[in-house]
Length: 412
Image (cartoon, rainbow, N blue to C red):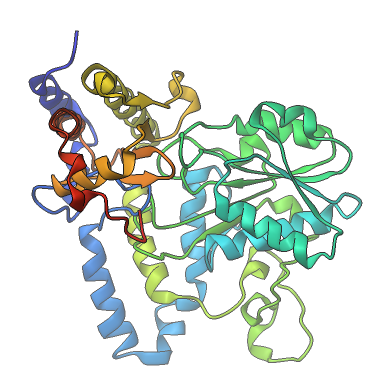
């Protein structure tokens, strides 16, 4: 029996995470379903940024590197993120962008596995990750090869030439989730290392890097961690690799004695060797607010709600929108999918523009995907019901066919 709006309201009242919605500055009249691309603004962030800008930077100036411990911000916040991804203290550091961090850890993995030359990945992996690997391939002068095989053939393709398996844990389009433990274990059994991109995982689905024995991981801070646009990213290096792998970007804050100002580079002993230039303090402080908020939620409750929201959205979309040519690409098994729902339609771009005009903000992924992020901290069950109701109306009335919804923007 289809769920009603009243049923959705009842689910919200019973939701143990419902109170977190008040911790976010969400605009009235908007159903925000794009937190898998840019997280919403925590209310505490503005106050924190005001303090950092006016007091720490404005009044205390350069003294804040010591007085407010700016110098340790990357490892302090890294240790907090570690709690969200099953890592230990000293294994995660906040630095740079996901792109730069992926370059660092892929280079490190290739350095450890010098007898091998192949980076193995899959078609349809987040393009940025493939581009970084292609860049490494070009820099190597032919020594490194990026090999792309279909998801179903990954296991059989880890041969004696594969140095590192590079995968995104939750697929950015389909939300399909890899079995991290199984694939990492298989890679290790065949002499390869594993690098995981957690950008669509951390804060939304269960991740346990230690249990999976992952070697390296990266992730961004601006999706489910709510760190703000362009928020600094983070990287994970398992403790067992930290003494043997050096970042290819030998920056001064990754030096073991940064303020000795010597000419010769000597890497720091632990995760700090993966730092490079001066820390983006404003960005790290904003990210810390989002991470602290996430740490207040019970992980099991968070992940259970993620599954409930996705299942409800997919079922309602099928019941109410299937007759208009909408097709769900969500995995049927809730244990093997992330926290967003993707619907396929040949006119997905125009439909999404019409939805946004009605206050339902998702995004479009070429060539035909309507993508809806269901962030469990601030998205409610009534949000899901209303969003699908509006989607059904957009499809029924064909309002998406209006010329104003056909114009392509640079960011989709």
